[in-house]
Image (tube, rainbow, N blue to C red; front, side, top):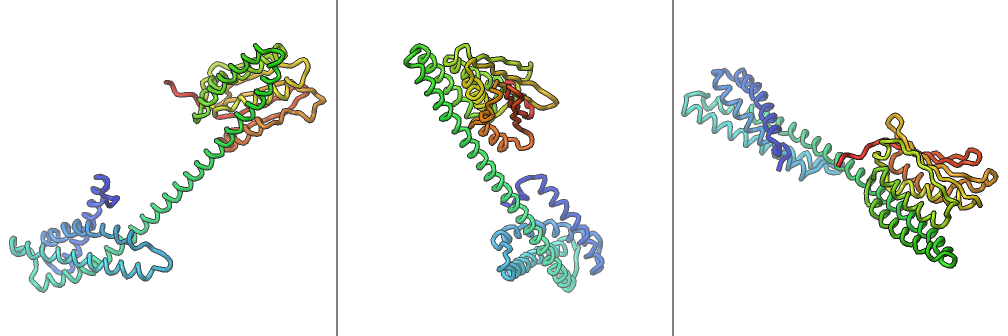
Length: 355
């Protein structure tokens, strides 16, 4: 089906355009060979609208004969042949219509006049059809360009999703390795703690699977997952691990990529708490600022432990995910200030839609 015919509004505008051309044709016929004005209009307008639909056949001719560098001669010959055929159809329709008007209403020309009109209309018809063919080639080129852009965009999105899936897939094995080591260390000295840790790990992994399947989640869901993780680690560290939260009201409703905070908190526990005899406090902050969501995770480090600044797999994973997801609209800044190591995420503040 011709794309023009898919919408009534397009058909209406197309007919209107050919009515305007028909008005011009009627004037040309009137001056080409003197005749009553009504006769010129009754021939020019209906013929123009009819021939306008004949010119739509160029759509199928253009599709079957695409313009290629090595086939321009063939395409030109095919279009000239199609133009001659289409113009012949238009001339035949004009002849029959003129004869009908002359026989039924006495409006028209003699045979010599009709022949002159036919020659004139045949030449005009070829030109009109070729213009229609050019317009169709341009439309097909535009559609091909749009299709190529869509394919490129789809390929880009597929590549981004594949990279994100690969980055997410790194998280669970990494966390599981650390957790199983922790459980193994508790089995001998604290069997009850090991059991609680296994239960917490199962609950944590269920939540991870649920969140990981979504494109974005409220910050409150991410914080709940972090709480499950910290509950597991507190079985291991006990009083050595303290947690502080400073979440600004309203920030919890903002959407964030799933599984974004847990690897950062894990990084803070692993590099900031586990290596200190006295342990430490992991502080989690979140607030909104001028359309941005600022999330910070802070943990203590030994000032002289320059070789362990918290740079682990989790931090690098989050950096790469933000690069894929947000570009300039999302960033991660990590720095050590004395005995505190602080990681700050900057995201666009987009609230979760009301359910």
